[in-house]
Length: 614
Image 1 (cartoon, rainbow, N blue to C red):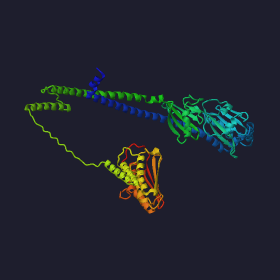
Image 2: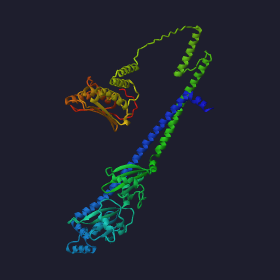
Image 3: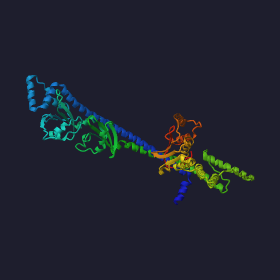
Image 4: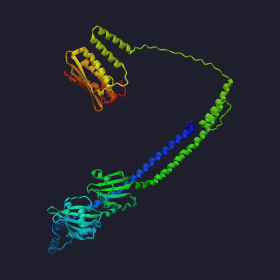
């Protein structure tokens, strides 16, 4: 079977198949759309839930680091509160270790020895209380040496003179932020563990308030994982803590210690946005990145979850939605198909019956006892055939008479060419009699009338300016040297679409009310320019002008809603521009008595597309 015959047999001439196909398409598309929207909604909800869980874990990490930072600050405050300890620390920072030992021995003879005021004992006790401290370092600015306590409570001193080390330069740059241990300090104390972060606190002499050095604490980054213990396997992805320079301070999966974080470029812009301390982005590397900025301590907590790992959380929901959608599609297609096929069979029986009647078998009847529409059609056909048989037997004949009446209405019309031809005859008569100025005026009037009467599909600025020129030409001929006019316009603006009779009533208003016939220097200037989306036409004259009180009345009349019959010309232009284009367009009027009047007309600056006859 050819493709055209197959289409005709199965689609074009089979209404029920088309209905079934249409309904199936609508049902399938609706189910797919609902399933997709449901899947997107549930997956986004689960993604948001996982990211919220990750955010809570990040906040727990942030709180842990903040508490460690606070504990170091509190340790220094406690040291300042103990007067004897504070003095011993200042002496320890300002003198050599041997001098400090002698100082402590002298204190032993002078008074009862208090171990709580001993610097070494104090810091060793603090190491006992904080197992996550790897190194506790005191830097003396005057003596330029590092006094270190490692995690085994071993005390050592290292000279770091500026001539042989960069440590003094590093310590000179005071920083209260959480950061990675400096390379030169690592080298000086021989501490190369990659899983460390450092806290730095300045040490001042309590009496002189002079800075005597720095307290530097190296903490084991792996202890931060204690803040994540409560989340167990519910936490997806990894938690990373980065310094302001992008150095990895903590890695929950131990993948990036001592390495460059691969998504640091994605998160680098986060350091500039300290006002929004929490945000979520999806990087180009198919990675959900959750961020939390700590502007005070100077670090950023990053939560990163790969798309594949995130998809695992809603993969079961996806399979469930897919299974339910397939079952719904099968039900939505097969169940209606059963009813449609049944209706199609009954309809085919009716079609076969009508063909029998067409071939002349008026005794055929449809057997369909059901009470639906097809059953009613079948009974109606049977009744119609019964009536038809009776009608044929009666041999009823009727004569139909048809009358047709045509009414022709003739209406006299005055063709505009009649008036044009008449004005032309008068003009030629005036020229033949020597009145050339009258002929020119009649010619201008004829052309002006033709331009006003003619209906153009697109009315442009050039048409309006030409009408104004013809009108002004009439009065230039009349007043001769006493009146002149100028029209200034960029030729590129000629094609702009404008409202018909937008400028002519304003010019006519000047001729009627503003021109001074006793003067020889009457001038009217029309200046057209564009300012963005506005076409501005400025009409200036040096006529009589308008007195202040009258000018105020005119301006009030222009803005008045009701029509009172006054100022028809100006009000007509202003009202039509406002009605067609909005409140930003219309007329602006300025005038001084005895000096002249300036009228600015604002209309849209657009190419001629639509006809405007308003």
